[in-house]
Length: 445
Image (cartoon, rainbow, N blue to C red; front, side, top):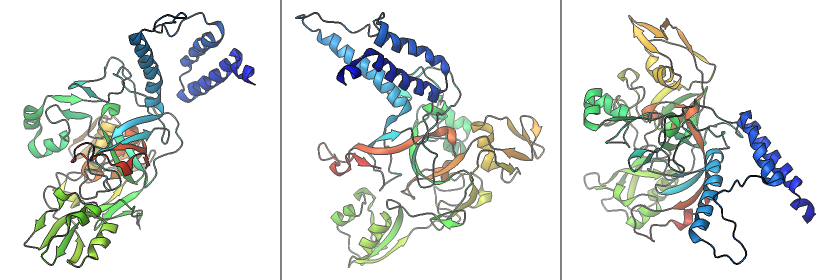
């Protein structure tokens, strides 16, 4: 058996079959030429493919630098395809998913769940997303259209999803973490670009990565009623990590800081108001609410619910579709239809703000309104048929999450993958080594 497994023809057959299956999955049959390389590696051995690797003679002293070069090149050859097709490292940058995912969590994102996207800018510095030392890390010399390989499934309601930020196609160089379109709505295009530009334009796969929970998929109708999410007329499941802000009234005394920390509250968010007395806005899960409500010095815990007109800064200029006509708030939102591929919607001047960006940006048509007539590619249009599926994402930290309520739909072309495991986690507010969250290491999502 050992001799059989070591046979060069067996090795060629095994690796050739795996490579052939990969080419079929990739769908680009020019890559079949790679079988010649595999044949030479195992059978003819005419070409030294590892040209950088030195073959040492017996007793010859090893060159440390060459050995390190060999290890680095091998790692690059292995890790780059792994990063493109299977797993990608990702760090949670904000608190929008607490208490499900914490700021400072480091994740591995699985790409096979929904199928990996092929790079739209393949000429890119390995292991760097979009910038390095303040400069873009990729070249526009080769540009490719969006294409996704087959995966194990599709985005489902309730999935936690990593995706490219839909508004990340245009970035302010002086405020790269901010939403360019929000600044334009509040301050005007000219002022925004003069003060915070120049602008950086990015392809879809180089837009910043976000992570949220999918609360509605293509074809659904979503509504948020007094903070509760409803899909197709039914309440969505309440997942354990979901939290809202609550007004917590006490008898005038503070709640012990250790109790607040055990309830998942960051102490910098626990601002005591003596005029209440208590805390006006504590982010809490339902489990934490039950625990605080049982304290002797707590009189009541009441969820904060935004009704129209919304509190600043959640004005209509913040909330999608950015028009006061809809009178929506973050806690009373919709109903809103989530577009599905192949579905048609009747276009009116009233609902055009909902679908303008889909038609104009995500699906690349020339959209204009002239004399109250909607024109798509110069032709009057009463209906529009969607070319892609879309999704609606919300953070589990419902009152501290800039999500689809603030920038609209997530196109299928922007989906990256599904978080699989937290491989490392650190508290950004504590010094090393006390900042390591040992209980979250190798935690499956």
